[in-house]
Image (cartoon, rainbow, N blue to C red; front, side, top):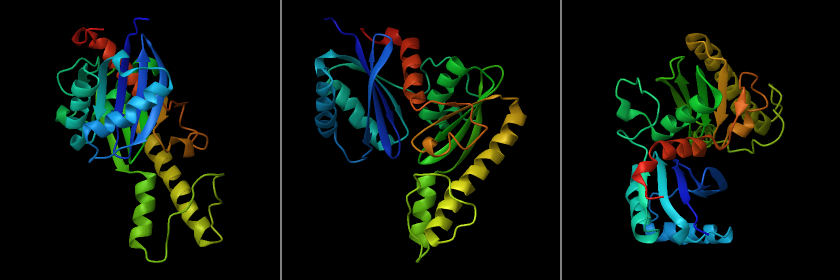
Length: 263
């Protein structure tokens, strides 16, 4: 079979998500930890067996599309494409076609993941829209009624908040956040921390979303990212949950730039 297979790679600060695009469908996805020190050959040793387990040879890969917010990993990704997959690669960066106009004061400052999420939200859910990405940082990204990316809000993510609490408060510690939303008033230290993190972030998210929706007239709020599961069912202002939003955005960008590839 003459496969036309492309890897979609979203490199986040904590987790790297890999999608397998075959023709126009994302048929598999994997999540691995991000490591700034992992060289190209170790990336290959990690990814090639994952692909083989689902019946895909490294020779099937005809291109790699990368969204990265970790510059230290970028050179190793390029080496991975050239030396191990022997294919062309595309990084989401200024100069590629995205189909969205960036209205940031300095467009080069916008994280690639934020651009990719905005592209996906615009094409899949309509505008005006807000994307909330629950990652190492929680980002709110706004697309106006013209379909332009106009900016957003960034603050520490849930895991960062938890680690900061445990690091700087001698008697406090990290707790498991899975399970039902805790009561507002915790009856133990563990319950109090769970309430502070989950209820505290929930109120912050609802407050910001309320103001931002009024600011741009948005009715669409798309949640994504590793910690979105904690809030998707308890925040009534979230209209869509899409755990693969970034991969879908990379797919859209790939097809807008497909002339750069031989596939």
